[in-house]
Length: 289
Image (cartoon, rainbow, N blue to C red; front, side, top):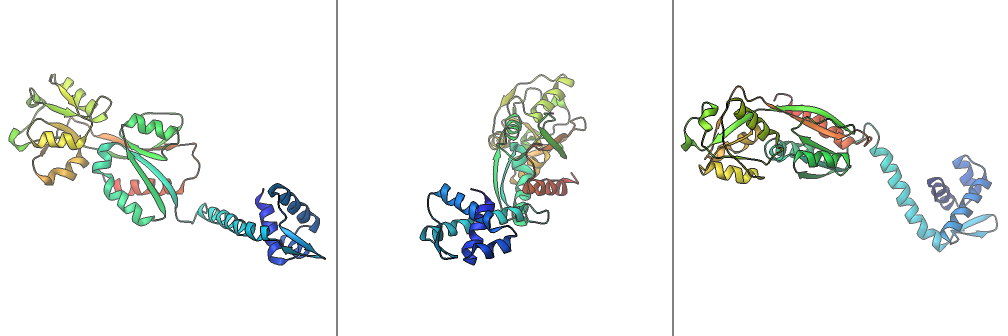
């Protein structure tokens, strides 16, 4: 079954004549006759009742015409959706590391939905290796990660550099140098987290030995820190999101370098207008960070 066959069938049904249909479709009548016979053979029913030189659509033809109209209408809609001037639509599957999902993305996701209401957003979080793997496997259309990892199937866009803030309870007093962390509990995401790696490198550089407790939840980390149980190193966006709740204060250090965040997608995925608009919005929203 081909779209050209459906178009021929629809035109003949509307005109009641193969000759008139051939004039509209600019093809010879015999071609239309043969194509419709092939369609009837494939479906196993007669679509028309032959009456003299004319045709009357059969009951099976009437039923099939309703589906033909839907199919051809969807094809036209698909073509319009792919036009450069069309508004994005369809499904957009986005992944992000937890810190970005909590700190930077909520307002942006809301704005994207307002700008492109026809796009159905599917959003998930996870560690960056899993997000990257899901983009490679086409399980996600795109993702925001904080690791510079080259992959032959991945295209990437630098979107912003995330400054780092050490958070602690006000009861801990001033933390002005790395040595002030000696003996304190430190709560960080498990191994593989780029922010944890940055903290470990910073502490090693200043020869500060301390134990880091792994917690795979920013909510739990925030609760432990605000209760005075220890400290953590978090992205500035996360700190700004939660500093107003009280119970935490931030400390910054010049030699703690910002972490570059990337927007990644599969370079073999082809045209995806919703993904492209999401990337444009990311660049626009984060250009001053």
